[in-house]
Image 1 (tube, rainbow, N blue to C red):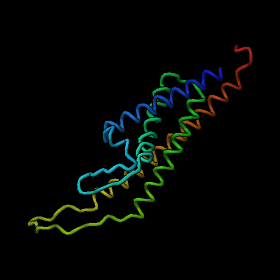
Image 2 (image 1 turned 120 degrees about the horizontal axis):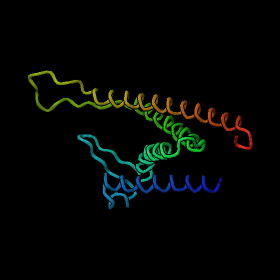
Image 3 (image 1 turned 135 degrees about the horizontal axis):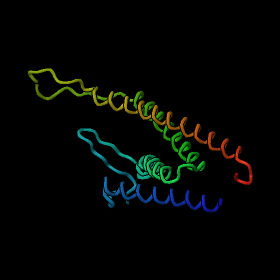
Image 4 (image 1 turned 90 degrees about the vertical axis):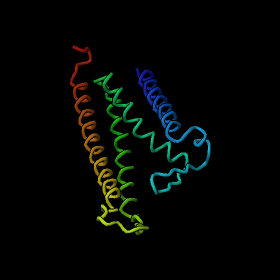
Length: 167
């Protein structure tokens, strides 16, 4: 029974890793994944990331999605709830780190090269929406963590209340 669960966890991580590598290759190209650093340009912002950090940031949501699919396939598995609680705790920590980084860094706003007759929108809009999205992600991960801990306690209590004969 335990070896079957370990195989399920190993398959879960293998499928998540494969989907992550495929998704990363589709996003930046497989040739770019072979380099040590990834150069990503989004609008007028230029990011330089290491390959491992890029893949690990994609791996966490992929593990969460694959875990939810496994949870829907096996409704009463305590191991799935424990793994999802662990993944959501890691996601909480990562989103907390993201909010710290976003609050510590201030965006640089350059004046426009030409004068616009109408007032332009606030340049801090995308920064604030990213910061609030990180707060929202952190809150959702906290709720998901609490729900999975509740389900683990409820399932283990139901398992202990069942007599050994199963009747």
